[in-house]
Amino acid sequence: MRSVGTQSELENFGYKQELKRSLSFGDLLIYGLIFMVPIAPFGIYGDVVTISHGMVALAYLIGMVGMIFTALSYARMSEAFPLAGSVYAYAGKGIHPFAGFMAGWAILLDYILVPALLYVVSAEALTGMVPVIPSWVWLLFFILINTVINYLGIEFTARTNKIILIFELIVLAIFIVVGIAAIAKGVNGAHFSFKPLYDPENFSLPLVMGAVSIAVLSFLGFDAISTLSEESSGDVKQVGRATVFSLLIVGILFMAQTWVAALIFPDYKNFDDIGTAFYQVASVAGGEWLSRLTAVATAIAWGIADALVAQAAISRVLYSIARDRKLPHFLAKVHPKYRTPYRSTLLVAIISVLVGTVFISKIGILTSFVNFGALTAFLFLHVSVFVYYIAKNKSKDYWNHLFLPLIGFIVIGYVWLNLAGQAKLLGLAWLVIGLIIAGILATKKKEVDLPL
Image (cartoon, rainbow, N blue to C red; front, top):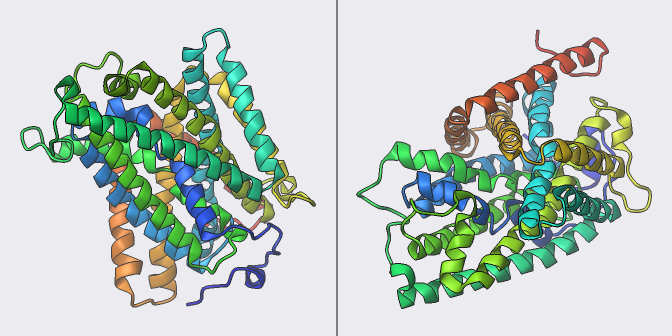
């Protein structure tokens, strides 16, 4: 069993080092934090706290623990295959090219639509604050900014990430400080309690797990770090470390902010609007200025920061699949100066404009597609760890290569089964399309190798 290095040994897989290796551990860590959005609960707080009957911090704790197992599987496979294709490369090299194609096709549903989803959410949020500007104007504004930044290079993207992350953390710190002060003063009847973490009067596992199935979606994005494997300047373990650490950090932040919010507004049944529940909490804690600040921060975090890294991630996946000639090869073209997959980046921008325009008021449908793609790809990932290490290479490290991936598979499988019926129906239709494309590629001898 062999892990490859980071630069010249990439040639062992038949690829040339085309992308620029310039990202440190800190850059990768920030990338993961940005993608998951440290203030992600701002946007879905109302749903999670209502379904969990106030135990919102517990929902995020369980979600973090569950995602840790998937992060560990990403770490194992990124060490063995430090390639830009993420789960496409891991399943393809670890299991079989056909499995890799289907895993890549599933993650495409997540990655290629999530930028559009983020743009739509941000556009509608700002339209609510500035009604005179149509949503489609904000949509085009965000897409233009992110496309230019990603076109100019991953280093520019990394620098932008740092600035926006600092802004998010400042807003989060302000909310937590003001929130704690409000709790100390007993604003709205607030007082310290462990109920957001565990309320024996309302606790039931099915109830909490229902909330987890929503809360866990805030963590989706940590996996995108693996798409930068060919741009990492460190050893083969650097991507895995960044993946796990970013997940732990953001999980703690999620728990802290939701715990404070739940204490400030314990009556989770009486929000004016579940969709804007967090901003109502912020208004109670600090006034209208804090409500507006958290709303603007959400729009910037989703529309620029998160969408920026989402667009970078999907362009790398498209680049990787096209490099293997399983998508049009022109998508594998790297910019001669900036050394970025610029054609894939531009394609994602075009798709985001089209999808965002069509679904500008249909966020629920877009979200269903995204969730199905991510979770299906995670299932492929856990299987790839077992097949590659245990079945193929006879590893005796059963803890890392069997037990942990198995737990991850069970957790993700549970969440997958609890997805909405519409999500599964639309997602399965997407997979059928992938099977048809795989069949066409196999007949043209594009090395998908259908296991018939």
